[in-house]
Length: 275
Image (cartoon, rainbow, N blue to C red; front, side, top):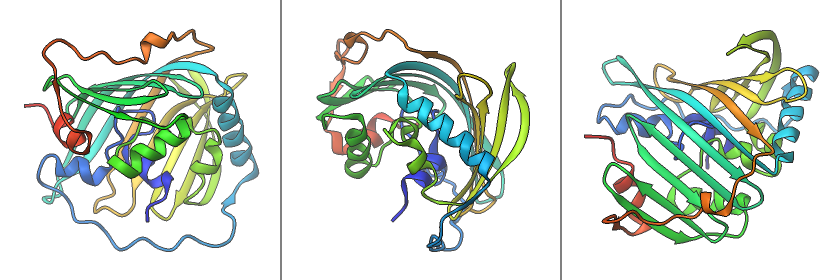
Protein backbone atom coordinates (compact mmCIF):
# COMPACT_ATOMS: atom_id res chain seq x y z
CA UNK A 1 0.00 0.00 0.00
CA UNK A 2 1.32 3.45 -0.88
CA UNK A 3 2.08 5.83 1.98
CA UNK A 4 0.54 9.27 2.30
CA UNK A 5 3.81 10.93 1.35
CA UNK A 6 4.03 9.24 -2.03
CA UNK A 7 0.40 9.93 -2.85
CA UNK A 8 0.70 13.63 -2.26
CA UNK A 9 4.25 14.27 -3.46
CA UNK A 10 3.81 12.38 -6.71
CA UNK A 11 0.87 14.52 -7.53
CA UNK A 12 0.97 18.08 -6.36
CA UNK A 13 2.04 19.50 -3.07
CA UNK A 14 -0.01 22.65 -2.81
CA UNK A 15 -0.56 22.68 -6.53
CA UNK A 16 -3.93 21.37 -7.64
CA UNK A 17 -7.53 20.75 -6.81
CA UNK A 18 -6.85 17.05 -7.04
CA UNK A 19 -3.38 15.61 -6.60
CA UNK A 20 -3.05 13.59 -9.80
CA UNK A 21 -0.15 11.12 -9.53
CA UNK A 22 2.46 11.32 -12.28
CA UNK A 23 1.42 8.00 -13.82
CA UNK A 24 -2.21 9.08 -13.96
CA UNK A 25 -1.34 12.40 -15.52
CA UNK A 26 0.47 10.48 -18.22
CA UNK A 27 -2.52 8.23 -18.79
CA UNK A 28 -4.62 11.29 -19.41
CA UNK A 29 -2.70 11.79 -22.65
CA UNK A 30 -2.86 8.05 -23.50
CA UNK A 31 0.89 7.45 -23.81
CA UNK A 32 2.64 6.54 -20.60
CA UNK A 33 6.00 5.25 -19.53
CA UNK A 34 6.11 1.87 -17.86
CA UNK A 35 6.48 1.83 -14.09
CA UNK A 36 9.84 0.88 -12.69
CA UNK A 37 10.70 -1.91 -10.30
CA UNK A 38 8.42 -2.70 -7.34
CA UNK A 39 8.78 -0.42 -4.37
CA UNK A 40 11.37 -1.36 -1.79
CA UNK A 41 10.32 -2.04 1.74
CA UNK A 42 10.73 0.96 4.02
CA UNK A 43 13.63 0.58 6.45
CA UNK A 44 12.74 -0.27 10.04
CA UNK A 45 15.20 2.22 11.51
CA UNK A 46 14.53 5.93 11.87
CA UNK A 47 15.40 8.04 8.80
CA UNK A 48 18.87 9.58 8.73
CA UNK A 49 17.92 13.26 8.65
CA UNK A 50 20.53 15.89 9.43
CA UNK A 51 19.72 17.86 12.57
CA UNK A 52 19.38 21.22 10.80
CA UNK A 53 17.09 19.81 8.11
CA UNK A 54 14.92 18.12 10.72
CA UNK A 55 14.72 21.29 12.80
CA UNK A 56 13.67 23.43 9.84
CA UNK A 57 11.10 20.90 8.63
CA UNK A 58 9.66 20.74 12.16
CA UNK A 59 9.47 24.53 12.32
CA UNK A 60 7.64 24.69 9.01
CA UNK A 61 5.26 21.93 10.06
CA UNK A 62 4.49 23.51 13.43
CA UNK A 63 3.96 26.93 11.86
CA UNK A 64 1.54 25.56 9.26
CA UNK A 65 -0.36 23.54 11.86
CA UNK A 66 -0.76 26.68 14.01
CA UNK A 67 -2.44 28.70 11.25
CA UNK A 68 -6.15 28.80 11.99
CA UNK A 69 -6.94 30.27 8.57
CA UNK A 70 -4.86 31.08 5.50
CA UNK A 71 -4.89 31.44 1.75
CA UNK A 72 -2.09 30.81 -0.74
CA UNK A 73 -1.42 30.74 -4.47
CA UNK A 74 0.79 28.37 -6.46
CA UNK A 75 2.10 27.81 -9.95
CA UNK A 76 3.00 24.25 -10.85
CA UNK A 77 4.51 22.23 -13.67
CA UNK A 78 3.83 18.51 -13.99
CA UNK A 79 6.24 16.56 -16.20
CA UNK A 80 4.80 13.63 -18.14
CA UNK A 81 7.07 11.08 -19.83
CA UNK A 82 5.72 9.40 -22.96
CA UNK A 83 6.66 5.87 -24.00
CA UNK A 84 8.78 7.44 -26.74
CA UNK A 85 10.90 9.11 -24.06
CA UNK A 86 9.55 12.56 -24.91
CA UNK A 87 8.77 14.74 -21.90
CA UNK A 88 5.74 17.04 -21.79
CA UNK A 89 5.11 19.83 -19.27
CA UNK A 90 1.62 20.77 -18.07
CA UNK A 91 1.22 24.02 -16.14
CA UNK A 92 -1.48 24.96 -13.65
CA UNK A 93 -2.32 27.75 -11.22
CA UNK A 94 -4.11 27.22 -7.93
CA UNK A 95 -5.77 29.33 -5.25
CA UNK A 96 -6.23 27.60 -1.88
CA UNK A 97 -8.24 28.64 1.19
CA UNK A 98 -8.09 26.77 4.51
CA UNK A 99 -9.87 27.40 7.80
CA UNK A 100 -9.23 24.88 10.52
CA UNK A 101 -10.54 22.51 11.66
CA UNK A 102 -13.03 21.81 8.86
CA UNK A 103 -13.01 24.18 5.89
CA UNK A 104 -11.23 23.92 2.53
CA UNK A 105 -11.60 25.44 -0.91
CA UNK A 106 -9.22 24.91 -3.80
CA UNK A 107 -9.50 26.32 -7.31
CA UNK A 108 -7.26 24.93 -10.03
CA UNK A 109 -6.96 26.05 -13.64
CA UNK A 110 -4.65 24.35 -16.08
CA UNK A 111 -4.27 22.09 -19.09
CA UNK A 112 -5.37 18.92 -17.28
CA UNK A 113 -8.12 20.24 -15.03
CA UNK A 114 -10.36 23.26 -14.50
CA UNK A 115 -12.27 22.64 -11.29
CA UNK A 116 -12.98 23.69 -7.70
CA UNK A 117 -13.09 21.51 -4.59
CA UNK A 118 -15.26 22.66 -1.65
CA UNK A 119 -15.41 21.28 1.90
CA UNK A 120 -17.70 23.05 4.37
CA UNK A 121 -17.46 20.76 7.40
CA UNK A 122 -20.43 18.65 6.33
CA UNK A 123 -20.17 18.03 2.59
CA UNK A 124 -17.46 17.77 -0.04
CA UNK A 125 -18.28 19.06 -3.51
CA UNK A 126 -16.37 19.01 -6.78
CA UNK A 127 -17.31 21.41 -9.58
CA UNK A 128 -15.95 20.87 -13.10
CA UNK A 129 -16.17 24.20 -14.89
CA UNK A 130 -15.25 22.92 -18.32
CA UNK A 131 -18.15 20.45 -18.43
CA UNK A 132 -20.45 22.39 -16.05
CA UNK A 133 -20.93 19.28 -13.91
CA UNK A 134 -20.71 18.79 -10.17
CA UNK A 135 -20.85 16.13 -7.47
CA UNK A 136 -21.56 16.36 -3.73
CA UNK A 137 -21.14 13.82 -0.96
CA UNK A 138 -21.47 13.83 2.85
CA UNK A 139 -18.03 14.26 4.44
CA UNK A 140 -16.48 13.69 7.90
CA UNK A 141 -16.39 16.42 10.54
CA UNK A 142 -12.69 17.38 10.36
CA UNK A 143 -10.18 18.21 7.66
CA UNK A 144 -7.87 15.35 8.65
CA UNK A 145 -10.69 12.81 8.34
CA UNK A 146 -11.96 14.30 5.09
CA UNK A 147 -8.55 14.14 3.42
CA UNK A 148 -8.33 10.43 4.25
CA UNK A 149 -11.97 9.93 3.23
CA UNK A 150 -11.39 11.52 -0.18
CA UNK A 151 -8.28 9.42 -0.77
CA UNK A 152 -9.71 6.08 0.29
CA UNK A 153 -13.19 6.41 -1.20
CA UNK A 154 -12.53 8.38 -4.37
CA UNK A 155 -8.76 8.34 -4.88
CA UNK A 156 -8.56 12.13 -4.89
CA UNK A 157 -6.47 14.58 -2.90
CA UNK A 158 -6.77 18.16 -1.84
CA UNK A 159 -3.73 20.16 -2.91
CA UNK A 160 -0.75 19.59 -0.65
CA UNK A 161 -3.07 17.69 1.62
CA UNK A 162 -0.30 16.28 3.80
CA UNK A 163 0.65 19.83 4.76
CA UNK A 164 -2.91 20.42 5.99
CA UNK A 165 -2.94 17.62 8.56
CA UNK A 166 -2.75 18.45 12.26
CA UNK A 167 0.75 16.87 12.28
CA UNK A 168 2.34 17.58 8.87
CA UNK A 169 5.86 16.54 9.85
CA UNK A 170 4.81 12.99 10.73
CA UNK A 171 3.13 12.55 7.37
CA UNK A 172 5.90 14.14 5.32
CA UNK A 173 8.69 11.92 6.67
CA UNK A 174 6.70 8.68 6.43
CA UNK A 175 8.65 7.43 3.39
CA UNK A 176 11.89 9.33 4.04
CA UNK A 177 15.18 7.41 4.18
CA UNK A 178 17.48 10.41 4.59
CA UNK A 179 17.44 14.18 4.54
CA UNK A 180 19.98 16.98 4.50
CA UNK A 181 20.40 20.74 4.55
CA UNK A 182 21.72 22.12 1.27
CA UNK A 183 22.05 25.84 2.02
CA UNK A 184 20.33 29.18 1.47
CA UNK A 185 18.94 30.46 -1.82
CA UNK A 186 16.47 33.08 -3.03
CA UNK A 187 12.98 32.16 -4.23
CA UNK A 188 10.83 34.96 -5.66
CA UNK A 189 12.74 37.54 -3.64
CA UNK A 190 12.64 35.63 -0.35
CA UNK A 191 15.67 34.07 1.33
CA UNK A 192 14.93 30.37 1.84
CA UNK A 193 16.49 27.28 3.38
CA UNK A 194 16.94 24.50 0.82
CA UNK A 195 16.36 20.96 2.14
CA UNK A 196 16.65 17.65 0.27
CA UNK A 197 15.06 14.29 1.15
CA UNK A 198 15.36 10.80 -0.29
CA UNK A 199 12.72 8.10 0.02
CA UNK A 200 11.76 4.68 -1.24
CA UNK A 201 9.13 6.07 -3.62
CA UNK A 202 10.15 9.68 -4.26
CA UNK A 203 13.02 12.09 -3.78
CA UNK A 204 11.95 15.63 -2.96
CA UNK A 205 13.32 19.05 -2.17
CA UNK A 206 11.71 21.91 -0.32
CA UNK A 207 12.61 25.56 0.08
CA UNK A 208 11.42 27.09 3.39
CA UNK A 209 11.28 30.83 3.94
CA UNK A 210 13.86 32.15 6.41
CA UNK A 211 12.73 34.23 9.38
CA UNK A 212 9.57 34.48 11.44
CA UNK A 213 7.34 32.85 8.79
CA UNK A 214 8.85 29.44 7.91
CA UNK A 215 6.52 28.84 4.98
CA UNK A 216 7.16 26.49 2.04
CA UNK A 217 8.02 28.49 -1.11
CA UNK A 218 9.05 25.82 -3.61
CA UNK A 219 9.00 22.04 -4.10
CA UNK A 220 10.71 19.78 -6.58
CA UNK A 221 9.53 16.16 -6.53
CA UNK A 222 11.02 13.23 -8.48
CA UNK A 223 9.02 10.04 -9.00
CA UNK A 224 11.58 7.23 -8.65
CA UNK A 225 9.31 4.38 -9.72
CA UNK A 226 8.45 5.73 -13.16
CA UNK A 227 10.75 5.44 -16.17
CA UNK A 228 12.78 8.61 -16.89
CA UNK A 229 12.07 9.95 -13.39
CA UNK A 230 9.42 12.62 -14.12
CA UNK A 231 9.54 15.75 -11.98
CA UNK A 232 6.93 17.95 -10.41
CA UNK A 233 7.80 21.58 -9.63
CA UNK A 234 5.67 24.07 -7.70
CA UNK A 235 6.38 27.65 -6.65
CA UNK A 236 4.21 28.85 -3.77
CA UNK A 237 3.49 32.54 -3.20
CA UNK A 238 1.13 35.15 -1.79
CA UNK A 239 0.69 33.47 1.56
CA UNK A 240 -1.98 35.22 3.63
CA UNK A 241 -1.87 33.94 7.22
CA UNK A 242 -4.38 34.89 9.91
CA UNK A 243 -6.81 35.48 7.06
CA UNK A 244 -10.48 36.29 7.56
CA UNK A 245 -12.31 33.60 5.59
CA UNK A 246 -16.13 33.66 5.89
CA UNK A 247 -18.32 30.56 5.76
CA UNK A 248 -19.73 31.49 2.35
CA UNK A 249 -16.30 31.00 0.78
CA UNK A 250 -16.50 27.26 1.48
CA UNK A 251 -20.17 26.72 0.67
CA UNK A 252 -21.02 25.37 -2.75
CA UNK A 253 -24.03 26.49 -4.75
CA UNK A 254 -24.40 24.81 -8.15
CA UNK A 255 -24.31 27.25 -11.08
CA UNK A 256 -27.42 27.58 -13.18
CA UNK A 257 -27.70 24.70 -15.63
CA UNK A 258 -24.97 22.62 -13.98
CA UNK A 259 -25.51 18.85 -14.15
CA UNK A 260 -25.33 16.68 -11.01
CA UNK A 261 -23.34 13.43 -11.33
CA UNK A 262 -22.67 10.63 -8.85
CA UNK A 263 -19.48 11.02 -6.83
CA UNK A 264 -18.06 7.55 -7.49
CA UNK A 265 -17.61 8.56 -11.14
CA UNK A 266 -17.11 12.28 -10.53
CA UNK A 267 -13.29 12.53 -10.67
CA UNK A 268 -13.05 10.87 -14.09
CA UNK A 269 -16.05 12.76 -15.40
CA UNK A 270 -15.36 16.22 -14.01
CA UNK A 271 -11.57 16.28 -14.22
CA UNK A 272 -11.17 15.10 -17.79
CA UNK A 273 -8.59 17.03 -19.82
CA UNK A 274 -9.76 20.05 -21.77
CA UNK A 275 -10.94 19.53 -25.34
